[in-house]
Length: 135
Image 1 (cartoon, rainbow, N blue to C red):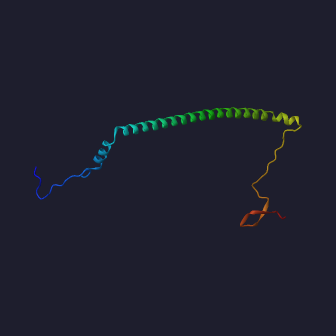
Image 2 (image 1 turned 90 degrees about the vertical axis):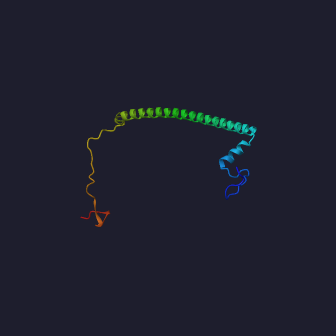
Image 3 (image 1 turned 180 degrees about the horizontal axis):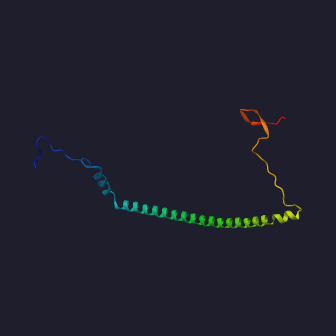
């Protein structure tokens, strides 16, 4: 080709000019030595192994805690059932104990009628305060 095109001088290229970011990045990666890549790979593997170990230990701790909690729940459920059984026995024996103490069963029942108020209001507009009936 000719050294000059129509109306346009031919430019010269310098390193890094006229290339995109990807090309520059790949060029920088290509200049890194193999030993550096080996060191990066070893560090990444050690970090992933450490993270895996920590995750495994945490899962084991959680499993142990869960088993302990389930054991405690079972013991507490048994205690509640025992107390309920004791309460039912006491409730069943209550009439016999009252009779042994000389108490008698009630024959008459007393009721209170709460439909009528027991007094007259002080102020008819304010019905919460009552006075005794004046007859």
